[in-house]
Amino acid sequence: MSRVLTINRNARKRTAGASLNCSVFSMRKSVRTKQTVSQNCRGSVNFSPKSVMIVLIFLAFIFGSFYLYQVNDLATKGYEIRDIENEIKKLKADNEKNKIQEVELKSMHNIEKAAQDLNLVSSKGSTYINLKGPVAMK
Image (cartoon, rainbow, N blue to C red; front, side, top):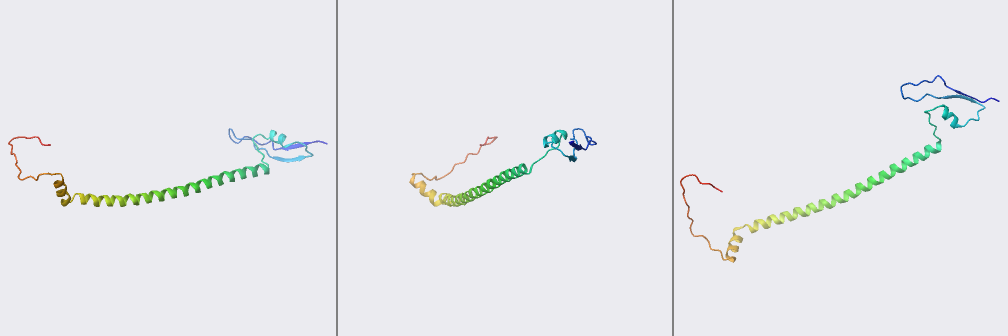
């Protein structure tokens, strides 16, 4: 019994660095293993269905984990944004209260009351000096 493996020997390199185009046409009474075929056809890769399934399951796990991370991160940032928006509303209300308090403190009534409490004397007259010539001003 002869064992014959027919390989496309007309395959040539298409471009520099390209792998050989090895395709198996027939195998008569062959006991050769896949390794022997792979060794003859350099550049070809054989994937078993089991390894493809493992890779697909691994990729599904990775993408699923990434999706859960993104959803969780988005929800967390939503809560942070809501807290910051509430803080902004509170600060705006405090700002309005401070503006009202500023206007009240700048009112003439409060200034006169503070002057009386500090025993300040009001000025009776003002004297102005007129200078002739250049004068430096601050």
